[in-house]
Amino acid sequence: MTATELSFLHRFVPADRPGAPPILLLHGTGGDENDLIPIGEMVAPGAALLSPRGKVLESGMPRFFRRLAEGVFDEEDVRRRAGELADFVAEARNAYGLAAPVALGFSNGANIAAAMLLLRPGTLAGAALIRAMPPLKQPPRPDLAGTPALLLSGAMDPIAPAAQTETLARTLRDAGADVEQHMLPAGHGLSQADISLTKAWMAKLT
Ligand code: MLT
Image (tube, rainbow, N blue to C red; front, side, top):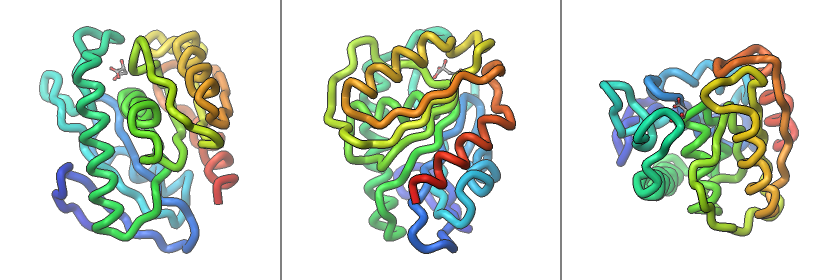
């Protein structure tokens, strides 16, 4: 396992299963590049893992873009940061010899993954979005034909209410993505069902 800089501080775990798509791990607010490595190993055993740390700090807590209040996003920053992260993915693919990754994003990490799908289509080969919200009020409509997306919402989630995930699911479907959606009896936190559904969905990609 290596921790190098490129344009984002990150961790990289090389693949030991040929053919498994690489996974881009995107943490939630206050997380870092270490957080989701064990989850990545559980849901995509043997896949290469690329795990950057968000560059925006909110009271010392890393995030992937700025927000003005909880659930109110600085959309100019969303656009800029989605571009920066997509550029990092291109750099890392080149440095490590990787195919286009499938994102596994939690909370703020799911939101930046959704922003990359919408703003920089082609960067991600798919995305598992856990507790996601629409990152933009007026999203563009890229061509995401056949791009697999998994959206997992929590019925009791006060931060990313299920209705918001539904709006995002509609946007992705309208763009042609192949969306699988589940509402779990959970809050904002990760649950065991998130792990097992993500693992089953990832297994269908290989
Ligand atoms: C966000 O800011 O991206 C969402 O509110 C999720 C969070 O980070 O709490």
